[in-house]
Length: 258
Image (cartoon, rainbow, N blue to C red; front, side):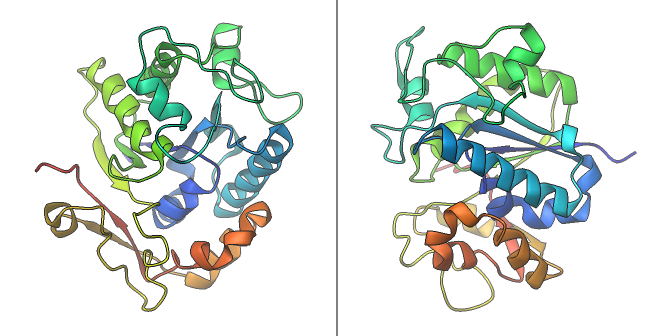
């Protein structure tokens, strides 16, 4: 029996940049979990980004009820200001407010984020709440495989997201899924992803061990990949960067061991 897969995405579009090929192979078994609303530029753009991801995932065949948002904040990319990074490394019980608020919400009108739907209340922006939500998702779905961002990603949310997932897994000892990491933001985004060539070069941030241990997933239809990416109109100001992810394969990495 084919097992379900969970893709944890810090922001809307990360699930496609890192998981398009996996989603395309078996969309009916895919769950996508957004940790934040991608609301760095406000609630209006968060609504737009949610709609864009839903359109992209629907295009790929993912069931609508397999698209979940935890509804936390996005406060920027550098680690000192990043929401998930600051929560993970902050004091227990630390409450972080953003320009949008201090508790979870769903970016679409009339819909409920995961915490509200499960427990009947919004969650405060704390590390404990994020961890509880991630654990609950894993306990409900019990995936056979998890895809998540990489601890070596320069975006603070991307680097912290796998720390929450790993901590949640440690609390569920009878759940032992395969775990894969995808890389989105490297140290020099003018160089990586490489703009020339149809296969990825080694990211500067990754170790030789990670690169040698990579898993390559073929992209069967690069034109469809592009059509999917073009649905993210709000992010198209970075079109050159986004399109540089469209290659003959997507690359997944093990955890750094050195």
